[in-house]
Length: 125
Image (cartoon, rainbow, N blue to C red; front, top):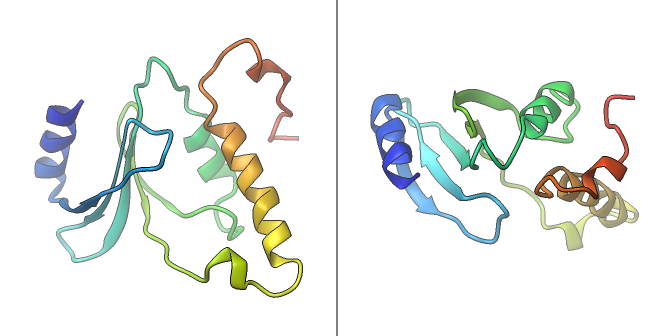
């Protein structure tokens, strides 16, 4: 996967600023585009993950709940908006609880498919 990511970065003019950890993804990095724009590069094995994260980014586009999808680079690999912002613990009253709920929903989207994922609520209702 690393060689594929390296090739994609070269072909797309992406500079890896920092590889990140703490994600369920196979690879995640802060990158900079050839136009100097910061972005997040995320890669997962397409055999283990379906397209539900990409679908979610598209469905929730413009809501402020998810970052903007910039480009799908290859199956399982996409580029999304780089976001910085206020720490959850410093949000106004109720903000941290709302952020937690959104986080729980996003966490469910990252569960590797197995027999339990069929019990998750459908997000397109």
